[in-house]
Length: 342
Image (tube, rainbow, N blue to C red; front, side, top):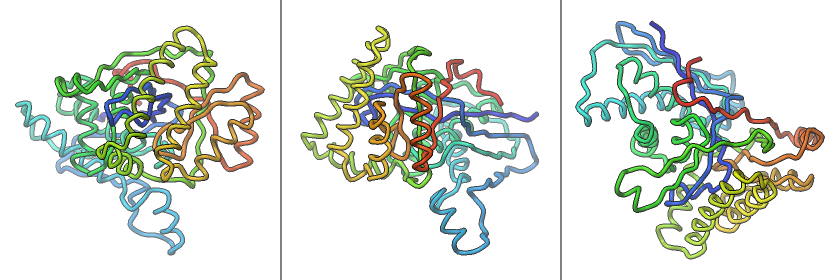
């Protein structure tokens, strides 16, 4: 039997990066790209390297290019960490695992290290494959926590829950990380949200801004832990903006959605200025020059925004492409976590 699972990139519509600081966010996954994991029974346990794990290069320039694209660590570490944490989860919950072995391989089309949760997608697909192989059920809030633990506890990556919740639920989600609730239950208040088709969203990214989310969160967390007033106020306002956007979506008030996206980015620049590069700002400024509201989808390298009609989208595409920026209309996944085979 061959088990095939996939997970998708995440786009944070509003509220990020407050998810790691008891804030609120709205996020969704979209299937324009995907991470895939294949698992099948074999005599020995084996992990098959993918493109980002290659150990040899044609020359030093090729090595430099690969490091710039994928970083110093490939995807095999994600598979190893996923397996290790999954086994720990089962041990902690008294779940007995059979002793059959498997081979696991992965692939991904998600633009790498651009704030689209590409690494989390590989981990999510890996855990789903392991669940099926070992016939283990995990509630979605716990699944999101498990995926996060792979990154924070096993790999030492400072990250928030938002990406993992969106990828675990496989639908647009309103997330309230209320501190009291989190401390009592271990996860936030997650509510499925419908994003209307006539809210015209775009995602744009460039490939020369690769930077892991740990860069942003390590700096922001230090300021948050030190109770820097501007950061604490920003987290509160990001949460408030999330409430406003959720209400505006329900009312079809898309102009308010646009103004909130703009404000979300302004706050980001004010309290995280060192992690908002000139090229990140440039993407938002280019969108703004054509009247489109936009903000970063995650740690950096990609933005999400609202376009008004097809003529507007075509103008954005022309401008972005002239500046080496890709733009897509995200096909939002709404089918739930069970519809994730490929």
